[in-house]
Length: 422
Picture (cartoon, rainbow, N blue to C red):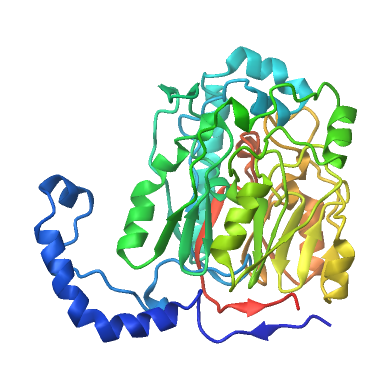
Protein backbone atom coordinates (compact mmCIF):
# COMPACT_ATOMS: atom_id res chain seq x y z
CA UNK A 1 0.00 0.00 0.00
CA UNK A 2 1.26 3.48 -0.83
CA UNK A 3 2.23 5.39 2.28
CA UNK A 4 1.65 9.16 2.28
CA UNK A 5 2.92 11.46 4.97
CA UNK A 6 1.55 15.01 5.18
CA UNK A 7 4.04 17.63 6.33
CA UNK A 8 3.06 20.69 8.25
CA UNK A 9 3.87 23.94 6.58
CA UNK A 10 4.86 24.88 3.09
CA UNK A 11 8.04 25.16 1.11
CA UNK A 12 11.30 25.04 3.08
CA UNK A 13 10.27 27.08 6.07
CA UNK A 14 8.29 29.74 4.26
CA UNK A 15 5.81 30.01 7.13
CA UNK A 16 8.56 30.54 9.68
CA UNK A 17 10.15 33.16 7.50
CA UNK A 18 6.81 34.91 7.12
CA UNK A 19 6.35 35.06 10.90
CA UNK A 20 9.86 36.40 11.44
CA UNK A 21 9.34 38.87 8.62
CA UNK A 22 6.20 40.19 10.27
CA UNK A 23 8.04 40.66 13.58
CA UNK A 24 10.89 42.64 12.08
CA UNK A 25 8.90 44.28 9.28
CA UNK A 26 8.74 47.71 10.90
CA UNK A 27 12.51 47.87 11.36
CA UNK A 28 13.25 46.60 7.87
CA UNK A 29 10.76 48.87 6.11
CA UNK A 30 12.66 51.98 7.13
CA UNK A 31 15.90 50.55 5.75
CA UNK A 32 14.15 49.54 2.53
CA UNK A 33 12.75 53.03 2.09
CA UNK A 34 16.17 54.66 2.57
CA UNK A 35 17.85 52.13 0.28
CA UNK A 36 15.44 52.68 -2.56
CA UNK A 37 15.53 56.46 -2.19
CA UNK A 38 19.29 56.29 -2.77
CA UNK A 39 19.03 53.97 -5.76
CA UNK A 40 19.70 55.44 -9.19
CA UNK A 41 16.78 56.12 -11.49
CA UNK A 42 18.00 53.52 -14.00
CA UNK A 43 18.01 50.79 -11.39
CA UNK A 44 14.60 51.89 -10.21
CA UNK A 45 13.29 51.52 -13.75
CA UNK A 46 14.44 47.91 -13.80
CA UNK A 47 12.76 47.06 -10.48
CA UNK A 48 9.89 49.51 -9.92
CA UNK A 49 9.47 49.09 -6.17
CA UNK A 50 8.66 52.20 -4.15
CA UNK A 51 8.30 53.07 -0.46
CA UNK A 52 4.62 52.22 -0.93
CA UNK A 53 5.58 48.67 -1.99
CA UNK A 54 7.84 47.36 0.79
CA UNK A 55 9.71 44.11 0.18
CA UNK A 56 8.07 41.57 2.46
CA UNK A 57 7.90 37.80 2.82
CA UNK A 58 4.55 36.68 1.41
CA UNK A 59 2.50 34.02 3.12
CA UNK A 60 2.40 30.78 1.09
CA UNK A 61 -1.30 31.15 0.29
CA UNK A 62 -0.58 34.55 -1.27
CA UNK A 63 2.29 33.36 -3.46
CA UNK A 64 1.54 33.13 -7.19
CA UNK A 65 4.05 30.27 -7.52
CA UNK A 66 3.49 27.01 -5.68
CA UNK A 67 3.72 23.39 -6.83
CA UNK A 68 4.92 20.26 -5.08
CA UNK A 69 4.19 17.53 -7.61
CA UNK A 70 2.94 16.73 -11.12
CA UNK A 71 -0.75 16.06 -10.39
CA UNK A 72 -2.29 18.45 -7.86
CA UNK A 73 -5.09 20.63 -9.36
CA UNK A 74 -3.47 22.91 -11.92
CA UNK A 75 -4.32 26.61 -11.54
CA UNK A 76 -1.70 28.44 -13.61
CA UNK A 77 0.70 27.29 -16.32
CA UNK A 78 3.28 28.71 -18.71
CA UNK A 79 2.84 27.44 -22.28
CA UNK A 80 5.73 27.81 -24.73
CA UNK A 81 5.85 29.50 -28.14
CA UNK A 82 6.70 28.02 -31.52
CA UNK A 83 7.02 31.44 -33.12
CA UNK A 84 10.45 32.15 -34.66
CA UNK A 85 11.74 28.67 -33.77
CA UNK A 86 15.19 28.04 -35.26
CA UNK A 87 17.14 24.87 -35.96
CA UNK A 88 20.14 24.81 -33.61
CA UNK A 89 23.61 24.72 -35.18
CA UNK A 90 24.90 21.16 -35.57
CA UNK A 91 27.34 21.18 -32.66
CA UNK A 92 28.65 18.16 -30.77
CA UNK A 93 26.00 18.42 -28.02
CA UNK A 94 23.20 18.63 -30.58
CA UNK A 95 24.58 15.66 -32.51
CA UNK A 96 24.69 13.56 -29.33
CA UNK A 97 21.01 14.27 -28.63
CA UNK A 98 19.52 13.70 -32.08
CA UNK A 99 18.96 10.69 -34.28
CA UNK A 100 21.32 9.95 -37.15
CA UNK A 101 18.59 10.11 -39.80
CA UNK A 102 18.06 13.80 -38.98
CA UNK A 103 21.72 14.84 -39.03
CA UNK A 104 21.55 15.99 -42.68
CA UNK A 105 18.60 18.20 -41.71
CA UNK A 106 20.69 19.90 -39.01
CA UNK A 107 23.71 20.20 -41.28
CA UNK A 108 21.60 21.92 -43.94
CA UNK A 109 19.33 24.11 -41.81
CA UNK A 110 21.31 24.77 -38.60
CA UNK A 111 20.94 28.44 -37.69
CA UNK A 112 17.87 28.88 -39.91
CA UNK A 113 14.18 28.73 -39.05
CA UNK A 114 12.35 25.43 -38.96
CA UNK A 115 10.14 24.89 -42.04
CA UNK A 116 7.74 27.83 -41.96
CA UNK A 117 4.59 25.92 -42.86
CA UNK A 118 5.30 23.35 -40.16
CA UNK A 119 5.90 26.07 -37.56
CA UNK A 120 2.69 27.84 -38.60
CA UNK A 121 0.71 24.66 -37.94
CA UNK A 122 2.49 24.17 -34.61
CA UNK A 123 1.60 27.72 -33.56
CA UNK A 124 -2.08 27.06 -34.33
CA UNK A 125 -2.03 23.79 -32.38
CA UNK A 126 -0.53 25.42 -29.30
CA UNK A 127 -3.04 28.27 -29.46
CA UNK A 128 -5.82 25.70 -29.42
CA UNK A 129 -4.13 23.93 -26.54
CA UNK A 130 -4.10 27.22 -24.60
CA UNK A 131 -7.78 27.75 -25.33
CA UNK A 132 -8.64 24.30 -24.01
CA UNK A 133 -6.55 24.82 -20.87
CA UNK A 134 -8.41 28.07 -20.21
CA UNK A 135 -11.72 26.29 -20.78
CA UNK A 136 -10.65 23.78 -18.12
CA UNK A 137 -10.16 26.64 -15.66
CA UNK A 138 -6.38 27.06 -15.94
CA UNK A 139 -4.71 30.47 -16.20
CA UNK A 140 -2.30 30.45 -19.16
CA UNK A 141 0.82 32.61 -19.40
CA UNK A 142 3.20 32.86 -22.36
CA UNK A 143 6.88 33.79 -22.83
CA UNK A 144 7.90 36.77 -24.93
CA UNK A 145 8.36 36.33 -28.70
CA UNK A 146 12.05 36.72 -29.58
CA UNK A 147 14.05 36.61 -32.81
CA UNK A 148 16.12 33.47 -32.25
CA UNK A 149 17.96 33.75 -35.58
CA UNK A 150 20.28 36.48 -34.29
CA UNK A 151 23.87 35.35 -33.83
CA UNK A 152 25.52 35.98 -30.47
CA UNK A 153 29.04 35.57 -29.18
CA UNK A 154 30.47 34.93 -25.73
CA UNK A 155 34.18 34.66 -24.85
CA UNK A 156 33.83 30.91 -25.37
CA UNK A 157 31.54 30.31 -28.36
CA UNK A 158 29.37 31.74 -31.11
CA UNK A 159 25.84 30.53 -31.79
CA UNK A 160 22.32 31.39 -32.86
CA UNK A 161 19.32 30.73 -30.65
CA UNK A 162 16.60 28.07 -30.81
CA UNK A 163 13.19 28.84 -29.30
CA UNK A 164 11.06 29.35 -26.19
CA UNK A 165 8.84 26.37 -26.97
CA UNK A 166 9.61 24.11 -24.01
CA UNK A 167 9.40 25.95 -20.66
CA UNK A 168 9.68 22.59 -18.85
CA UNK A 169 13.32 22.44 -20.00
CA UNK A 170 14.34 25.72 -18.41
CA UNK A 171 12.00 26.28 -15.43
CA UNK A 172 11.03 24.11 -12.48
CA UNK A 173 8.80 25.16 -9.60
CA UNK A 174 9.57 23.59 -6.22
CA UNK A 175 7.26 24.85 -3.50
CA UNK A 176 7.05 28.62 -3.81
CA UNK A 177 10.37 28.87 -5.66
CA UNK A 178 10.92 29.09 -9.40
CA UNK A 179 14.33 27.83 -10.49
CA UNK A 180 15.96 28.73 -13.81
CA UNK A 181 18.01 25.85 -15.16
CA UNK A 182 21.47 26.63 -16.58
CA UNK A 183 20.88 24.49 -19.72
CA UNK A 184 23.55 22.63 -21.70
CA UNK A 185 23.08 23.53 -25.38
CA UNK A 186 24.84 26.63 -26.64
CA UNK A 187 21.81 27.41 -28.80
CA UNK A 188 19.77 27.70 -25.59
CA UNK A 189 22.20 29.89 -23.64
CA UNK A 190 19.95 32.98 -23.75
CA UNK A 191 16.59 31.19 -23.75
CA UNK A 192 15.84 32.53 -20.26
CA UNK A 193 15.33 36.02 -21.73
CA UNK A 194 11.92 35.04 -23.10
CA UNK A 195 10.72 34.16 -19.59
CA UNK A 196 12.27 36.96 -17.55
CA UNK A 197 9.26 39.34 -17.71
CA UNK A 198 7.05 36.61 -16.27
CA UNK A 199 9.57 35.58 -13.63
CA UNK A 200 10.10 39.16 -12.50
CA UNK A 201 6.34 39.55 -12.15
CA UNK A 202 6.12 36.41 -10.02
CA UNK A 203 9.04 37.62 -7.91
CA UNK A 204 7.43 40.99 -7.26
CA UNK A 205 4.28 39.18 -6.16
CA UNK A 206 6.14 37.09 -3.60
CA UNK A 207 7.72 34.09 -5.31
CA UNK A 208 11.26 32.98 -4.63
CA UNK A 209 13.46 33.18 -7.71
CA UNK A 210 16.73 31.31 -8.12
CA UNK A 211 18.99 31.16 -11.16
CA UNK A 212 21.32 28.19 -11.12
CA UNK A 213 25.01 28.89 -11.91
CA UNK A 214 25.29 29.71 -15.59
CA UNK A 215 27.90 27.53 -17.33
CA UNK A 216 30.43 29.08 -19.66
CA UNK A 217 29.66 26.31 -22.17
CA UNK A 218 33.29 26.38 -23.21
CA UNK A 219 34.77 23.44 -25.11
CA UNK A 220 35.73 21.78 -21.82
CA UNK A 221 32.05 21.13 -21.00
CA UNK A 222 31.74 18.75 -23.97
CA UNK A 223 33.52 15.60 -25.06
CA UNK A 224 34.51 16.82 -28.51
CA UNK A 225 35.31 13.27 -29.63
CA UNK A 226 32.12 11.67 -28.33
CA UNK A 227 31.66 8.56 -30.55
CA UNK A 228 28.02 8.20 -31.63
CA UNK A 229 28.08 6.85 -35.16
CA UNK A 230 25.45 4.17 -34.49
CA UNK A 231 22.65 3.29 -32.06
CA UNK A 232 24.91 0.54 -30.75
CA UNK A 233 27.49 3.20 -29.88
CA UNK A 234 24.84 5.09 -27.93
CA UNK A 235 23.72 2.02 -25.99
CA UNK A 236 27.29 1.09 -25.10
CA UNK A 237 28.24 4.59 -23.97
CA UNK A 238 25.05 5.07 -21.94
CA UNK A 239 25.59 1.72 -20.21
CA UNK A 240 29.12 2.84 -19.34
CA UNK A 241 27.80 6.12 -17.95
CA UNK A 242 29.53 8.19 -20.62
CA UNK A 243 27.85 11.32 -21.94
CA UNK A 244 28.66 14.21 -24.23
CA UNK A 245 28.64 16.64 -21.28
CA UNK A 246 31.60 16.40 -18.92
CA UNK A 247 31.86 17.39 -15.26
CA UNK A 248 33.76 20.59 -16.07
CA UNK A 249 31.01 22.76 -14.56
CA UNK A 250 27.40 22.28 -13.43
CA UNK A 251 24.76 21.99 -16.12
CA UNK A 252 21.22 20.66 -16.21
CA UNK A 253 17.90 20.98 -17.96
CA UNK A 254 14.95 21.21 -15.59
CA UNK A 255 13.11 18.53 -17.58
CA UNK A 256 15.48 15.87 -16.24
CA UNK A 257 13.84 16.32 -12.81
CA UNK A 258 10.33 15.13 -11.87
CA UNK A 259 8.59 15.92 -8.58
CA UNK A 260 6.67 13.82 -6.07
CA UNK A 261 6.34 15.96 -2.95
CA UNK A 262 9.44 15.81 -0.79
CA UNK A 263 11.09 13.42 -3.26
CA UNK A 264 12.45 14.57 -6.61
CA UNK A 265 13.77 12.09 -9.16
CA UNK A 266 16.47 12.89 -11.72
CA UNK A 267 18.57 11.18 -14.36
CA UNK A 268 22.14 11.85 -15.44
CA UNK A 269 21.67 12.59 -19.14
CA UNK A 270 23.32 14.18 -22.15
CA UNK A 271 22.31 17.62 -20.79
CA UNK A 272 22.34 17.08 -17.01
CA UNK A 273 25.61 16.21 -15.30
CA UNK A 274 26.37 15.09 -11.76
CA UNK A 275 27.61 18.56 -10.79
CA UNK A 276 24.26 20.00 -11.80
CA UNK A 277 22.42 17.32 -9.83
CA UNK A 278 24.61 17.96 -6.79
CA UNK A 279 23.88 21.71 -7.02
CA UNK A 280 20.15 20.97 -6.92
CA UNK A 281 20.59 18.49 -4.07
CA UNK A 282 22.40 21.01 -1.88
CA UNK A 283 20.09 23.84 -2.86
CA UNK A 284 16.87 21.97 -1.99
CA UNK A 285 18.13 20.12 1.11
CA UNK A 286 17.00 19.31 3.72
CA UNK A 287 13.29 19.57 2.85
CA UNK A 288 13.60 17.81 -0.50
CA UNK A 289 15.54 14.67 -1.31
CA UNK A 290 17.04 14.13 -4.77
CA UNK A 291 17.07 10.53 -6.05
CA UNK A 292 19.22 9.63 -9.07
CA UNK A 293 17.60 6.94 -11.22
CA UNK A 294 18.70 5.52 -14.56
CA UNK A 295 17.24 3.80 -17.58
CA UNK A 296 18.24 1.51 -20.40
CA UNK A 297 18.21 4.45 -22.78
CA UNK A 298 20.73 5.03 -25.60
CA UNK A 299 19.91 8.73 -25.74
CA UNK A 300 18.93 10.04 -22.29
CA UNK A 301 17.65 13.61 -22.43
CA UNK A 302 14.69 14.70 -20.28
CA UNK A 303 12.94 12.21 -18.04
CA UNK A 304 9.27 12.85 -18.81
CA UNK A 305 8.91 10.67 -21.93
CA UNK A 306 10.61 7.83 -20.05
CA UNK A 307 9.31 8.07 -16.50
CA UNK A 308 6.27 10.29 -15.94
CA UNK A 309 4.68 10.46 -12.48
CA UNK A 310 0.94 11.04 -12.96
CA UNK A 311 -0.46 10.66 -9.44
CA UNK A 312 0.39 9.78 -5.84
CA UNK A 313 2.25 6.50 -6.18
CA UNK A 314 1.32 6.19 -9.86
CA UNK A 315 3.93 6.34 -12.64
CA UNK A 316 4.13 5.68 -16.37
CA UNK A 317 7.30 3.73 -17.16
CA UNK A 318 8.47 3.46 -20.76
CA UNK A 319 8.81 -0.24 -21.73
CA UNK A 320 11.54 0.56 -24.27
CA UNK A 321 13.61 2.31 -21.60
CA UNK A 322 13.10 0.29 -18.40
CA UNK A 323 14.07 1.90 -15.12
CA UNK A 324 16.94 0.10 -13.42
CA UNK A 325 15.59 1.03 -9.97
CA UNK A 326 11.94 0.12 -10.62
CA UNK A 327 11.82 -2.34 -7.70
CA UNK A 328 12.50 0.58 -5.36
CA UNK A 329 9.18 2.11 -6.42
CA UNK A 330 7.27 -1.15 -6.18
CA UNK A 331 8.58 -1.72 -2.65
CA UNK A 332 7.32 1.76 -1.73
CA UNK A 333 3.83 0.70 -2.81
CA UNK A 334 3.75 2.54 -6.12
CA UNK A 335 1.76 1.32 -9.12
CA UNK A 336 3.90 1.13 -12.26
CA UNK A 337 1.89 1.45 -15.48
CA UNK A 338 3.29 0.45 -18.87
CA UNK A 339 1.96 2.77 -21.60
CA UNK A 340 1.01 1.31 -25.00
CA UNK A 341 3.18 1.66 -28.10
CA UNK A 342 2.76 5.12 -29.68
CA UNK A 343 0.65 5.42 -32.83
CA UNK A 344 2.50 8.32 -34.46
CA UNK A 345 3.38 7.34 -38.06
CA UNK A 346 6.96 6.70 -39.12
CA UNK A 347 6.88 9.41 -41.79
CA UNK A 348 6.00 12.19 -39.34
CA UNK A 349 9.12 14.30 -38.64
CA UNK A 350 10.38 14.21 -35.06
CA UNK A 351 13.53 16.28 -35.33
CA UNK A 352 14.26 16.36 -31.60
CA UNK A 353 12.45 13.50 -29.90
CA UNK A 354 11.04 9.99 -30.13
CA UNK A 355 7.51 8.71 -30.65
CA UNK A 356 7.19 8.25 -26.89
CA UNK A 357 5.91 11.81 -26.60
CA UNK A 358 2.59 9.96 -26.39
CA UNK A 359 3.29 9.46 -22.66
CA UNK A 360 4.53 13.04 -22.20
CA UNK A 361 1.15 14.07 -20.81
CA UNK A 362 0.05 16.95 -18.58
CA UNK A 363 -2.06 16.17 -15.54
CA UNK A 364 -4.69 18.83 -14.82
CA UNK A 365 -5.44 17.00 -11.58
CA UNK A 366 -5.53 13.38 -10.43
CA UNK A 367 -8.59 12.66 -12.56
CA UNK A 368 -7.95 14.75 -15.71
CA UNK A 369 -5.12 14.43 -18.21
CA UNK A 370 -4.26 16.32 -21.40
CA UNK A 371 -3.41 13.69 -24.00
CA UNK A 372 -2.85 13.60 -27.75
CA UNK A 373 -6.09 13.30 -29.70
CA UNK A 374 -4.44 10.90 -32.15
CA UNK A 375 -3.26 8.41 -29.52
CA UNK A 376 -6.39 6.27 -29.02
CA UNK A 377 -4.61 3.45 -27.16
CA UNK A 378 -3.16 5.61 -24.41
CA UNK A 379 -6.52 7.37 -24.07
CA UNK A 380 -8.07 3.97 -23.32
CA UNK A 381 -5.29 3.26 -20.83
CA UNK A 382 -6.07 6.44 -18.89
CA UNK A 383 -9.79 5.77 -18.99
CA UNK A 384 -9.15 2.31 -17.52
CA UNK A 385 -7.40 4.09 -14.65
CA UNK A 386 -10.46 6.28 -14.05
CA UNK A 387 -8.80 9.38 -15.52
CA UNK A 388 -10.74 11.65 -17.90
CA UNK A 389 -8.84 12.47 -21.10
CA UNK A 390 -8.73 16.02 -22.46
CA UNK A 391 -7.87 15.41 -26.11
CA UNK A 392 -5.77 17.87 -28.09
CA UNK A 393 -3.79 17.37 -31.30
CA UNK A 394 -0.26 18.80 -31.31
CA UNK A 395 1.40 16.58 -33.93
CA UNK A 396 3.27 19.46 -35.61
CA UNK A 397 4.26 20.87 -32.24
CA UNK A 398 5.64 17.41 -31.36
CA UNK A 399 8.14 17.79 -34.21
CA UNK A 400 9.84 20.62 -32.34
CA UNK A 401 10.76 18.32 -29.49
CA UNK A 402 7.99 17.94 -26.95
CA UNK A 403 4.58 16.78 -25.80
CA UNK A 404 2.18 18.46 -23.40
CA UNK A 405 4.48 18.15 -20.39
CA UNK A 406 7.42 19.63 -22.32
CA UNK A 407 5.36 22.51 -23.73
CA UNK A 408 4.37 23.64 -20.23
CA UNK A 409 5.65 24.56 -16.80
CA UNK A 410 3.08 24.38 -14.04
CA UNK A 411 3.38 27.58 -12.03
CA UNK A 412 0.73 26.88 -9.42
CA UNK A 413 -1.00 23.71 -8.30
CA UNK A 414 -3.40 23.66 -5.35
CA UNK A 415 -1.96 21.29 -2.78
CA UNK A 416 0.32 20.77 0.18
CA UNK A 417 3.79 19.32 0.65
CA UNK A 418 3.68 15.59 1.35
CA UNK A 419 5.96 12.59 1.31
CA UNK A 420 4.91 9.83 -1.10
CA UNK A 421 8.11 7.80 -0.96
CA UNK A 422 8.87 6.54 2.53
